[in-house]
Length: 473
Ligand SMILES: Cc1cc2nc3c(=O)[nH]c(=O)nc-3n(C[C@H](O)[C@H](O)[C@H](O)COP(=O)(O)OP(=O)(O)OC[C@H]3O[C@@H](n4cnc5c(N)ncnc54)[C@H](O)[C@@H]3O)c2cc1C
Ligand SMILES: NC(=O)c1ccc[n+]([C@@H]2O[C@H](COP(=O)([O-])OP(=O)(O)OC[C@H]3O[C@@H](n4cnc5c(N)ncnc54)[C@H](OP(=O)(O)O)[C@@H]3O)[C@@H](O)[C@H]2O)c1
Image (cartoon, rainbow, N blue to C red; front, side):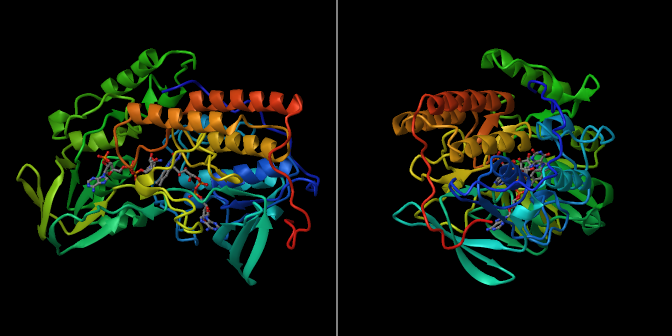
C-alpha cells in the first residue's frame, strides 16, 4: 500500500578481498539472517573491522526451512507476503524469473547469492552463538561466543543486534482455563501440511501465520476452525493485476490521504462478518497488514469455519465466548512472537510486552554502542530497511556521520514511539510498526544531516580503544 520501490541497479560484484581499516572501531554483528547480512555487507564495504557470529550453519535465518539453528518458523508452503521488488535490497534485485511473491527456498537462495556477490562470506563465523554481551566501564563490549573451539571472549566498541524477533513463540499468557486432551503447537513449530491431515484443527489468531496455516489445514484436515478474538482487515496480494504493495503513493501525502489506499485494499476483500468473523475494532491501516486472498476463498467455500475468541478448553472440545463449541484434537496457537535478547542481562536491556522504544528503531538512547538492525515491523518488507539502517550505522562507525545531541535523540525517540502508539491498536504485535517509504525517507534525511555535521567538523562519537586482545578479523 505504498510507494513503489524497485531495486535501482545491480551493484558490481566485490571480487577483491577488502581489508578492514584498523583505525576504526570494532563491531560485532549478532546473527546472519537477512538483517545480519545487510549489516555485515555495510560494515565490510565501509572497511569497519567486524565479526558476524551466526548460531546456525547457513545464512538466511527464518527463510531456511528446517534451519539447523532451530529458530526458523518457515513452513513448507511459505511464500513472502511482500512482493519481490519490495523485499529486495536496493542494489541486488531478485531475479526476473521469480514469481511476484517468491517461495521460501527462492528467498533463501537470494540471501546466499547476496553474501557471495558482495564478497563477505569470510566475515561470518558459523555455528557460533553469542552467549553474553556485557559493557565495561570503558565502553568496550565483552562478547562471549560459543562455537566449535569452545567459549571465547572478544572485545568490540559496537554491537549490532540482528538476532531476529520471530523465533520466540508467544503462547497465551495467562493460559486459557480448562484442560485440552489433544495436541497443542505454536505456529513456530508448524512445518508440513501432512501433520494436519485427518485432524480436527483449531487455529487461533488472525495474523499472517493463522491465515496460511488455516488454509493448509482446510485442504487436508477433517475440520478447520479459526478462533479470532479481534477482527482484522484482510488485504489482497494483487490489486488490478499488480502486487498490491507496488501501488504508487508519494511519501509527502498526509496520512489522511495515504490511509485511503488501506481502505481500498480492505474494501476489495469485502465484508467478512458475513462469514462469522468479528468486525475489526479499528480502521484499515491501524494494524499490521494481513493478507487473506486464499483464506477468504476457503472461508467462502465453507472449508474454514470462523468462531470468536476462546472461553475455555474442555477435553476434546473448545468453548468460545459466544457459547458455541467445536471438537478439536489439535490447536495451533498463531499468537505471535516475543522480542528476546538472551545474551543481554535483562537489567541491561529487555523488551517486556515487546516494547522497546528506539531512536529510528536502531539506537537506544541509554546504550551507546548498541545498534538494533531489523527490529521493526514494517508495512512493507524488512530487508531494505535493515539495509538502510546498516549503511547508517556503518557511516557512524566510520566517522562519516555524527548524531545530533542526546536531547534531540531522546525527544525524537519518545515522539516516534508515541506517534506509532496513537496509530496502531495496543497489542504486543504493534510495538514497532513503521511505514516502509516514510521510514526510508526519514533515515535518509537524518543520514544526510549527520554527514553534514561530520563534514562541518563535529568529532566522531566512536573511537577504537587501543590494544585489542582479540582483534576482529
Ligand atoms: C512465517 C513468517 C513469514 C514472514 N514473512 C515475511 C515477509 O514476507 N516479508 C518480510 O519482510 N518479513 C517477513 N517476516 C518477518 C521476518 O522477521 C523477516 O522476513 C526476516 O526473517 C528478518 O530477518 P532477521 O535477520 O532480522 O531475523 P532472522 O531471519 O530470524 O535471523 C536471525 C539470525 O540470527 C541468528 N541468531 C539469533 N541469535 C543468535 C545468537 N545469540 N548468536 C548468533 N546468532 C544468532 C539466527 O540463527 C538467525 O540466523 C516473516 C516472519 C515469519 C515468522
Ligand atoms: N510471508 C507470510 O505470508 C507470513 C506468514 C506468517 C507470518 N508472517 C509475518 O510474521 C510476523 C508474525 O505473524 P503472526 O501471524 O505469527 O503473529 P501476529 O501478527 O503477532 O498475530 C498474532 C495474532 O494472535 C492473536 N493473539 C495474540 N495473543 C492471543 C491470545 N492470547 N488469544 C487469542 N489470540 C491471540 C493476535 O490478536 P490481537 O491482534 O488481538 O493481539 C493476532 O491476531 C508478522 O510480521 C507477519 O506478517 C508472514
